[in-house]
Length: 485
Image 1 (cartoon, rainbow, N blue to C red):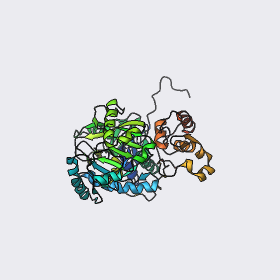
Image 2 (cartoon, helix red, strand yellow):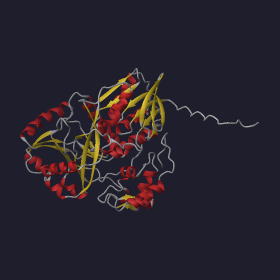
Image 3 (cartoon, rainbow, N blue to C red):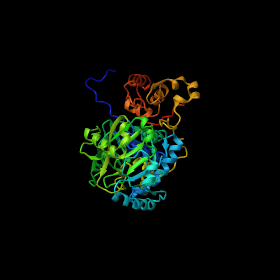
Image 4 (tube, rainbow, N blue to C red):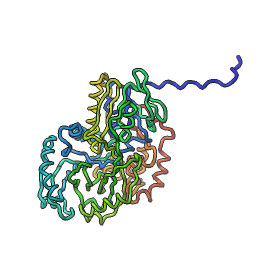
């Protein structure tokens, strides 16, 4: 039998399976939603425009676990932050996300701010948080000895905490994946079309059909919302720049030092970090460019000016890094979380910096909205145990100091990054994890390698060589995977 002559038509692309729910955006909120929904008898797809999870707004969060004491009472944000604080605190203890309950002190610098302190205490009580106390100037300086001159009083918030935003996003995404979520990285949604009971999300790397869509796209959530026929809000990228001071500065600040909040945000704070540094910032600059995450000379000078008033001694220490993140500012006074049962679509927008704290509560709220809109939710009987995340917090045991671990595997005794005490074993483990780093930036967020005072000058070459050695040559970006034993 002879072969047919002439060009043959290309075989048709295999039809994509229709997901029950597609979640757009693998930041901390989208990952939490995917994890929650994957606990039910549903097929869930998690889409991310970038090459890694938590690589947008989530990675540049101030990493504070908020009590919600200063949220506007009665708002959805207030309720979800309060619930999320407890949900994330419990989850962190189970999966190994580092959390330090440092407490916070909100400082008043003029008579108007001083008069706001009792008001803020009353707001905290209205939000269900009754542990705030107004402090006089003597008590403020007793708690923070090196604070600049001129403080008139303060408000204590003993349960504010610091955590690791990188590990939180990665833990939730990893948990979602282990529960069966189809994670698709480098899938930026360009348009949406509808065919009967499903929407098709047309992405850079292929089409993704889904019966329901949850829009948790952060800076791009208004653009996705428009693809579903809405025009109800506009996202303004608000750049927040921060300065990170060397670990030698840590004794100066034992707790979070907060300003009296304004309509534009929580203002410039001084905070210890989970990694042992001190952080000063953020700025709040509205931009048009949704990709403008570079730092600026004006931002640097602004923060130095704030630092001179807040804590002059801090400026005697070395700045080891500066970075900027973009927050999705919207023209609304609350979270925008709404379901459209007819279009089978849920908007999760306007999630400000409190989204790190509220993410798991947002996920439960979205679950309930989907159920009310008609999505059948049957709990799974075979939900796997959550992952145990590697610790990168300075106040908790690290592999380089674990003699038993080093004895069983010498790679944990081979330090690659001396500033942050990151070992070859940790780099190997990160590259073999269920969601491995796509580049050295992702490796940095998983291990702290190249994140210290030398900013990779000493260790980048060796860390990069190990990254190339250990990273999978061709790692699929979809389907569940097991945690390596």
